[in-house]
Image 1 (spheres, rainbow, N blue to C red):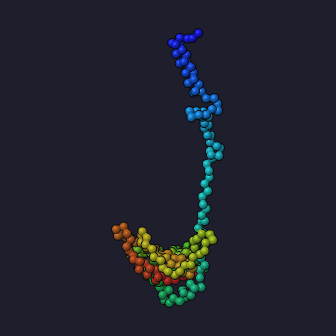
Image 2 (cartoon, helix red, strand yellow):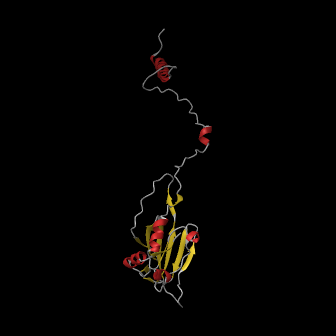
Image 3 (cartoon, rainbow, N blue to C red):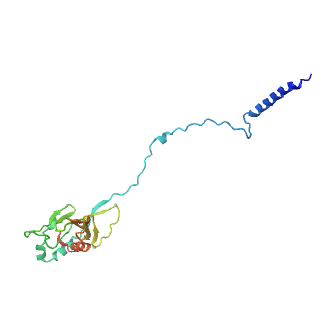
Length: 220
């Protein structure tokens, strides 16, 4: 028995829908251009116990500066002091000699500076490593420091120190450094007035000349 033509149309439409639906279904293991494997649920990474601890940063170890006593040539200092004329030494500032003297040969001006009433205006102070001398002036005050301490890193070779006078300007004046008999000396000039905010009370030639004219005035 054959169906009427109008009854076949719905059946053909249903069959087409069924085939289309089957075309969208993929069994496990199937592949194809329109197929994509379902993604597994992504796990949220958990911080490890090691990551929660703060890592310690190792800083480089730098050797600390150390000071050592310089080897003083006392014999040479005594010879130079003895070679000065007696009358010149008597008119200068008197410094203790022998074991009571500072641990470095003392350098001071050859004659009293700014003397009043026949007395020197030099203020002298022995220190454990040397001495300190303050010399007042009209345009600037002068400070002379002597020390037997040598600064350097542990195991570092000691640099050879010459007899040169090294000048350096400062914010308040100038300074000159030099070495004698193994000890180090620093002469500082402190201006009492500034010009346009700058120290102009002493020139380089004047500063070096004053340091050069310092004489040995005491030694052990």
